[in-house]
Image (cartoon, rainbow over all chains, first blue to last red; front, side):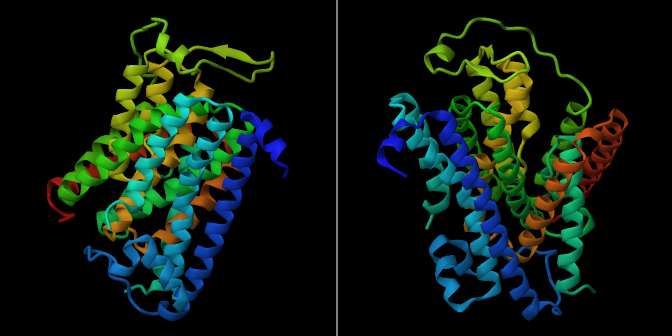
Length: 129
Length: 279
C-alpha cells in the first residue's frame, strides 16, 4: 500500500483492517495450538495427567523468551505455549494499532491514553522477569 | 484413571458446551469454565483460572472482529475505560496469588450468583443525566447505525463508569472471567450508553482486559498447555457454533434454565470453598 493512502486513513478503514488482523491472528494461534496438541498427544497421550494439585510449569514456559527458544526443539508443550502467546498478543497488537490510528488522527489525548494501556499490557507480559 | 488423550477430549467437549452455553445465555464462557474444571474434572483452581483466561481471550477476539465490522463499538470509550480495566486486572492477578483456593472459590460463587440474577433482571440505577463536559472533551459521544440512519448518543457519569470498570478489571484478573456482565452494567446503566454500543464495546474490552492478567498468570506457571489447549479450542468452537446458528433461540425459558444451572454451580463452589475441599 502507498504511503499516501496510509495517511488518509480515518477510523472506519483502520477498524476494518484491525478486525481482519484479529481474525487471521485467531486462525494462526489455533493452528499452532492444534499442531502442538497433536505433537503432545502422540508423545504423552497414554500417560496420566495429574492436575488436582498445583505444581506450576517448568521455568522455561513461564516467560516469553523461554517459550520462543523452546521452539527449536519442536516440543509439543512449547508449541502449545507459543500458540497461546500468539493469542495473548492479538489484543496487545490491537492496542498498538490503535496508537497508530490516533496518531494519524493527531489526537494527542488518545495517543496518551492508549499508550498507558499499552504500557500496562507490556508490564504484564515482560515486567516481572 | 484417564490418560491425557481421554482427558484432553473430555475437557474439549466440556469447553465446547461451555462456549455454546456462554454465547446462548450472553454470559460468556468464562463463568462456566472454572466451575466445570474444578468441580467436574477436579483440576486445581489456579490452572482452571489460567485456562479460562485463555478461553476468554479467544472467544472475545473472535466475536470482537465481527462487532467492529458492524460499527457499534466505540473505540474511544473502550480505550479510556481500558485504563481502568487493565490496571484492575493486574491488581486482581497479583491479589490472586495471596488468596487461598477456597477464598477464590467463594468469591467466584458470589460472582456467579450476581451474574445469574443480572441475566434475568434489569438492574435499575437512578437516572443521572448531568451532561458530562468530560465526555465531550474526550470525544466519546458518537453515532451508531440504525435502520433510520446514524443515531447520535451521549455519554454520562464517566467517573462512576470508570470506578465500576476498575472493579470489573479486578474481578477479571482474580477469577479469570471476562466480567462482561459488570462491564455492560457500567456502560449501559451508569454511563447511559445505548445497549448495542455497550455490548459491542464491552466485547472488545474483554480481550484486552484478559490479556493484561494472562501475562502475569503465565509467569506464575498457572497456564498449563494441556488444559489450556483443549479449553481454548473447545470454547472457540462452541462460541462460533453458538454465534452462527443459535442467535435466534434466545428464548426466555432457556435463560431461566441457565440461571438455575449457574446458581447451582455457585452454591457448590461456595460450599467447597467453605469446607476447604479446594485446599
